[in-house]
Image (cartoon, rainbow, N blue to C red; front, side, top):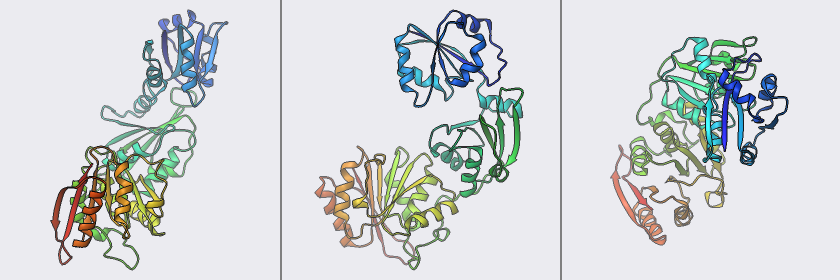
Length: 394
């Protein structure tokens, strides 16, 4: 089958090339959003069929297979975080001809006179915060953001940035780009963006104004401690060695079991921003403590699972590539038996032992699941007891 992908602006006055006009004149079957249908109606043949694209979109895209050809109308560049990519995935055999328009972030950069060759693009359209969190932690100089109507608006983006201390950007917000009558571009601070509502469709470009300092190894005193237990924290040198043994450069998901202050989760997220980090803590105050420290230390995007790890529903969580056991409440063998079958191939478990008894318990727990120790480091920090940093690999 043949599919023609036509990108258009948001304007009611379209300027279409003669080649695009001929494609439209010579075909009958069309698809796109309802807004696209209204914009394109003056150009369409009197006798035409139109398939509305309504989320979830896969069923409509699959229906294209019933036709020999289909003309799909989309906003801007259909293969730039758009429907075109999904069409290619669902119809890999199709012969596709693309007629792109400037995409919305290009139009915003043009309107604001911002050279954009190094722009880092983040799509939040119907997607989670993870890509934006990663870009902020990495300190990208220029971040172009595709928003959505309800959950990821300029206001909610600003609220998240302020909550985690990322006020080191200035924002350019574009509204109704491509619509000459309604287009508007506004430059404002993140605080100002948090107080405003904007017309939709919109998008924004963030420009970094300063680069905050970030130590390699967060000082222990930077964390708010567990009330009454100020020493209950994985100390910075031990924390960094634990992260090293977890092998997080290639990992996608880290589970921090017994997160307490969140020191390992937060250090991991800041050093490896691509990671999906899930923290487990049985103490009722664990979630609030983790969130306090995450905001204090600029580490958005850590998921928290409260309660007993051994009773937690893990079915909806991503498969761990690395697991740090920071607390076990005397039930280390049960934890290992639960974790090991879920661990991805080549995944690692790291445990810090402060006594020979807990070291032997970890070794015997590994033996119970058919594996053993792959690496071990003995470390001592100041006047504290020596600690065995122990790694097992599946």
